[in-house]
Amino acid sequence: MTQDMTWLRPHFDAVVETWYPLIQAAYRLYPSLVPLDYFTVEAHLKTLLGARNVQLELNDVAYRTYPKDIFLEIIALDKTNQRMALPDYDDCDDRAWEFKHNMRYWFNANAVGFVVDKSAWHAYNIIVFPDHAELLEPQQDRFVTFGEAITVATPKIGTGLYSLTSGIITI
Image (cartoon, rainbow, N blue to C red; front, side, top):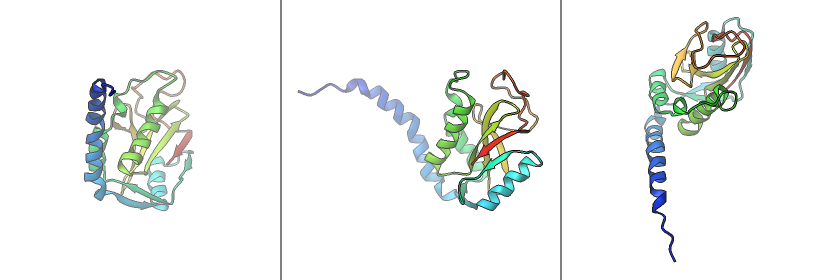
């Protein structure tokens, strides 16, 4: 006796529609990966952070990243910003971890960090490019700067700005 599995077809199609473009892009973009060493990553982070007293946790000796123009293409493909957030349960820290994971898992880029901004009571990402580093708001697929207002949610506590006067960066 065979079981009718046609009910699975729409689910299978949805998975293929979601993940196939990522897989195609990963194979196409992989040759553009740029290797970075620990000291280069640390220098780019310190240049961006300036005199901020932030705990840096660099967990690898060798890093891989893409030039910014290619990262923009990857960010457009990533679906992290399209997921609905559930306040205080499935929110900014989950999106930042998800984006970091997707970049490593799908695109082999480990020069993406997780930022816990204790002063803003918010989490987001930091991307180290071959020549500099920038902050990314993964819930909106946009680069942000220090002092800019957080527009994805109204923090209950904190500055309401991307300030990072105290926090942790894990990369």
